[in-house]
Figure (cartoon, rainbow, N blue to C red):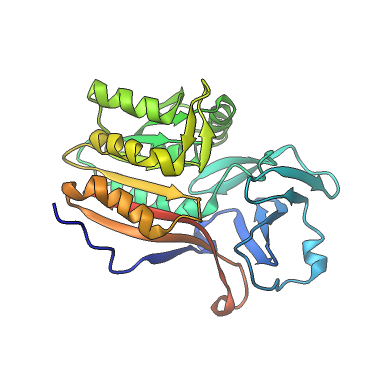
Length: 304
């Protein structure tokens, strides 16, 4: 089979403030980003923000939480100004996410994914039957809840019991306790391989793997080593009549071209259409014509 050509262009798709709910990127620069998650403002590392900060230092100094540490391994510690809540709600994508200061600088929600959630909901509305969605490396489950709200049956898989418990908190906060969601604590690679052997299929697959991780029994995940094998299993899990896949990679050292190549290698024979590029968040600057885009991750989307 002749190799597939590279994409004609790689897109940069920006999450505008109008789609990110209670989130806003207030400013960025000097290797940091100033964000609002609901009622709480945080100051976190962002090495890709190589430009100058625009807001005065007095604005940055009012952040409720500041994370000190290396962005490379995401390890460090939070310091707080005044009294900050243990957790708090934030509306996004039509559901409610419970935010908190995690040990790895995250709040439990990635607002740039709102672009994927919109795209996913549109695909699900066109499914010929009640859609089934598999969410691997599903973390705190915002994607799972948005897909469930769109009418899908969800299989939510994550290796962390703590993350699945957090996802269930989000389910309750969103009033979706009756939604058809299977919560599974398992290694994503092992689960996908078992589903292939069982002959299971899904209309939608959502993958947001980390660069490195461990399964519940100590299994090792390395993005650059294990992604191709997992992708081959995922292709087998896509319903032959109707399907889509959303893949996101926060390993920015990789290239969008590399992620595009992996997806086309396994999904190219299925036909369909691909879209590859970068997700970004637009700063909430005024006027918007001068606001900047902060890159966050690489992505590939496919639909049959």
